[in-house]
Length: 155
Image (cartoon, rainbow, N blue to C red):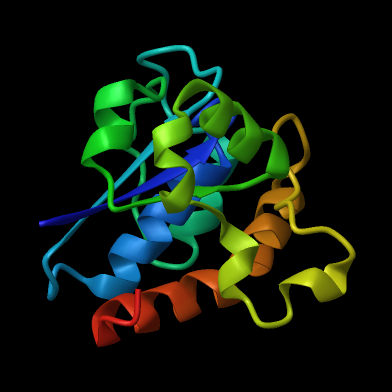
């Protein structure tokens, strides 16, 4: 089974939303394990209520999400480590230099990713609910392209 790991800072907004969206896109029809973690996550917390609600409106349930910190074991077992921001990429590569080849920014999978002026996915934490919808919209094309490429075996 191929493991895809999404990483953000607290593992309460961006990475669990990306995990939920990709799981929904792949719908368990393919042999992928999709996980998420944070570079500075507090263990055992639920996803942000706004993140849960924003995905619920799209028919995706992440209400059972429990936050966790990234670990060496997760990195080693992952085929791809997809991060939300350059700071996450640098942090992971500094701590796990042998994994550098598998660490990628999510927007690298969006042919228009750089058009926004930043390759980082904006963090909606502490923002109103509409910021979570904006974040999902910002991630959607990258996640769709990633799913297609995984299904086709192009990655």
